[in-house]
Length: 194
Image (cartoon, rainbow, N blue to C red):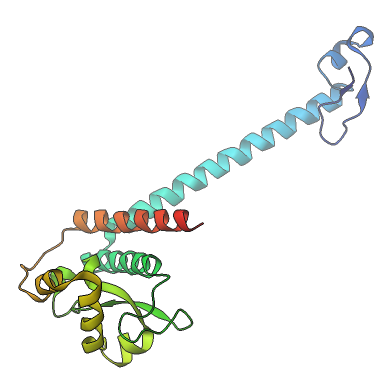
């Protein structure tokens, strides 16, 4: 069985174990190679320690950023995660208002806007993929939105959406849970699509 010097820069063939001297039994050509190998190992350990320290510092920095986030920052993150989930969920569907396909910019359009009904902000039944034109320039194109929504979810659920809802005050813990839930749902959808 052929053996090679363990020093990466050398890798010279070594004689068989029966013919070898002490250093070759250690899998090195000579003492210098053994020392160089030790230095290589020390450098690798230093690199691993540096990477571990950098990883720990990044985690601490991330934690510090999380601690100073305002409720508004958390709401924004939740909305981004929720909207991304809606766009992915409805990827194969046309615009809920005008029926345009996927060749235009798509948004997550709320039937009842966040400003008019904040308690339905994260209600999946009342948020569907909508083209940028209908959502931004036609203020949701609500007449056509309502017609399609009636077809998609039925009159009972639409009546519920259009009814009164108790205002919700989300705590930071609630918002963290909502963000994580929609990130996980988005990841699951992408996994299933792949």
